[in-house]
Structures are given as C-alpha cells and as structure tokens.
Length: 276
Image 1 (cartoon, rainbow, N blue to C red):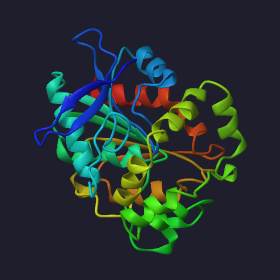
Image 2 (tube, helix red, strand yellow):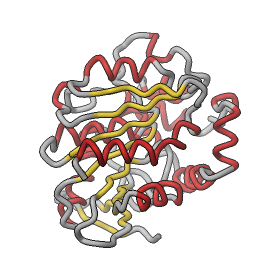
Image 3 (tube, rainbow, N blue to C red):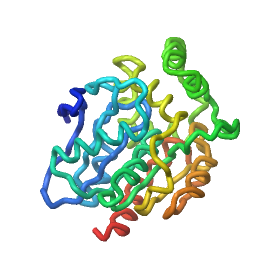
C-alpha cells in the first residue's frame, strides 16, 4: 500500500495510509512503534479485516514521508493524526498503539475523548517519572538514556547504536519468523532515511507528553508481556494506576513482539466496548 500525503496547517508533509473500504465500516487508527514507517503491515490489516475494520495509520514526524518536527510532544504527533482523520472524514474510531505507539493512542483519548470509542495499548510506555525504576528491566536502555540529554545527544547515539538481540525473548523471534515477520522488515524501512523519527520519538517519551492521563476518558485495555525486555511490565502497572477507565491483561510468557499476536482478540474487546 502506497502512502498518501497530507499537509498540515503549518505546511508540513505528513504521510498516511488508509485501507479504505465501506464508508460505514468502523475505523481502527493504528499507531506504529519505534522505528516503523506507519504502513499497515499484513498482520494488522488481517486482524482489522476479521472485525470488518478500516485501518488508518499515520507516520509520525521524521519518519519516511513525514517532515521532521524537532521538539514535538506525544500530543503534537497525535494532533497530526486527528487532522488526517478529519481530512478523510473519520469522526469516531477505535485507536490502538504498539510499543511507542501506545502513548500516542492514549493521547487521542485525551485530545478527542468524544471521538475515540475505545483504546488498546500493547507493550506501551508509561510517562517518564524521573525514577531509575522506569528503566528497570530494559535490556538496552541506551537510546532513552541518551534522549534524556536532548535531541542532539540522541542523534549522536544513533551513529554507533546497534540492536541488542537479547532485547527479544524466544517467543519474539518466533513471532518475527512467522506472521509478524513484516514488522521486522518495516522497522528497517522506518529507519532507512535516518534516525530523526526514532530520536524525536525517544525524546518525546521521556519529556512531558502534553496531556494528562487522567483526561483519557474512553475505556482502555493495556496488554503487556510479562517477559518483555524492551518495555517491562511496570510500565503497564503505572498506566493502570493513572488511567480513569482501564484494565490490564498480562501475558506472562510473551515478550515485546510476541504480545502482538493477541491483537485480534483485543480488537474484539474494543468492538464490544464501542458497541460495534
């Protein structure tokens, strides 16, 4: 699927993807992880199609096709998503985010609580609270440590950074060898034009998000792998404490990628909570 271009009010290019279909179909707004292109990869498209959902996905600033926006907050990137949704006539939606997409899904629930009917985050980050416990359990936290020192330090870190395979458990690798293989390929494509997107993502994660979790009024499902070595389980627990209407599903044996295999089940939950 080829991305389409949207121009923001301040003239920036934003790349988005839309599976289209029946105008009356329920809409899933998907928020990609770090790094990704925003393309609707096959396992996401298949899970949505099983529930009759149209998928809308937006590449965050700095990723291929979307102009960089240094200093952007989580809320800033989410506002781009809402502008794209407006441009294609999408009013109400279920919104789902994986990993770094999780905070952005929650942002839609704060910025447009009357439009988001249900929210799902899978292995999503909690706001940085200044505590070393926020990093506890992360096998390779170097990128977010660098992000704490600002954008330029994070960009410099990217020049020599390498992925640590120990960040994934065996179930993650099995998922990437199977149905979720397109996720790995898309991650490579998301980073292909340089580190701006992921650097700005990381800075945004450890900076003020631009919204209060207590303002997220739609129902939220937090899904967390108990064996996750990228975003450890305490992040989901911290989110649960602060969100007004949330429930938590822990998948004890799943890691950061393998937890995505329950996406279809979570969309069923979202459809039920939305009355679809």
